[in-house]
Image (cartoon, rainbow, N blue to C red; front, side, top):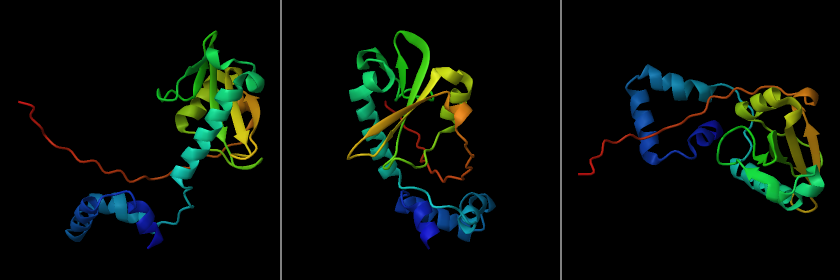
Length: 173
């Protein structure tokens, strides 16, 4: 029940009804996409809202203290967070440098990289700076890793994520 709830927690009632109806009709595609992954054992997925809050706090701390943390004034940072380019900030006078900011609640913990972020870390090497902000939110501390792909041991996590979209044909005339 918990897996079903977790899988469908952000899905509308209409989408759940549609999926159940298709399952009852024996729709093999829907069975493969939704039913089979739920029956397989999987690890606990961290609360997304909590991760977003921790990340936001880390980014704010970094912006307020970037000169002390990595020697770059906040005036020289280029905000790339909405560009989905594999890092959070660029540096105006060092166009090859990319800065990714990660936050953790304690002084030691796990961080997640998107595939794009990790590929940028591998590609940019010493020009990819990972700023880890820990002890959030009470007493933040930061550490910079230049070339994190060379020093971090990572393991990939492959997940099947359910995504439902609704398509409509519209006419504006």
